[in-house]
Length: 295
Ligand SMILES: NC(=O)c1ccc[n+]([C@@H]2O[C@H](COP(=O)([O-])OP(=O)(O)OC[C@H]3O[C@@H](n4cnc5c(N)ncnc54)[C@H](OP(=O)(O)O)[C@@H]3O)[C@@H](O)[C@H]2O)c1
Image (cartoon, protein in one colour):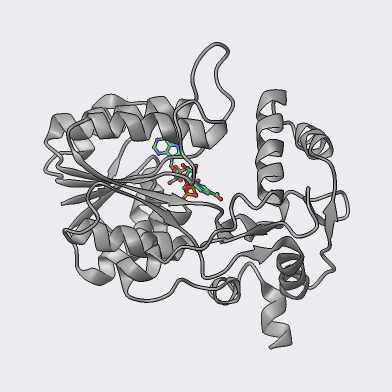
């Protein structure tokens, strides 16, 4: 039995349908009963904050997909909630006799790193010390970040923002992260590996803006601004100052090419290449109505 946490999220949802296609025995962890019913699969209602619910959800489980939301503002003087949540899940898994955990992490995860990199670094270290077998999936940027225009970092006119003219990211479709997780959770390969996962190419924000222009049916540009201007824009969205600065420095890292290296990990694990940005958009016609009009 496999337990899929984060089962209603961008990656978990895809994993649920891919495990179903494979005929694998799995259970989805959901916070909301109605969302569980909508998945059309076995589910357990639980919360990363509620250790008893995690213990119940892990009953009879041998393998776990661990995915939680990324970095959020920390409680004053405390650590990021995601660290506590993932530790709770790792503790519950170990206590239940789980043998193997596939953890959705992030590229460059490291203890003491900023934001998600630090949060995932801490939980990667905790998982490694647990004695259970593990695989870390380390994607850079998700294509899914562009599904919601309101969630994209943009100026008042809807133009994407970045700190360098030729900022490139090897964005990956969560469909491919899920495909890797499905292979790992239903097979015996990949134990003890940290796998940087990417799409097929590093695409520039200029190219993304051009794709979004036709997909959203309105002009989307790309504007180069300073790291401080990005932090200010993020604070304007209501982000807490420290988090805004860390996220802005992540954008500066993108400008320096930190997320542009392409790996073969998806092909190596699944036997096929990862989806391109165009294929990703074609798989989400509801979010990109302009494609249907033009094609
Ligand atoms: N976005 C990126 O570019 C990117 C890049 C690299 C790595 N990552 C990492 O990917 C992870 C997010 O993955 P994702 O985008 O697939 O997920 P997601 O869409 O953000 O969804 C989060 C999932 O966690 C569940 N959840 C939230 N709070 C919970 C709680 N207290 N207890 C139990 N479940 C809870 C949500 O359930 P509900 O439906 O109930 O809310 C949902 O299923 C993060 O760790 C992030 O650091 C993201």
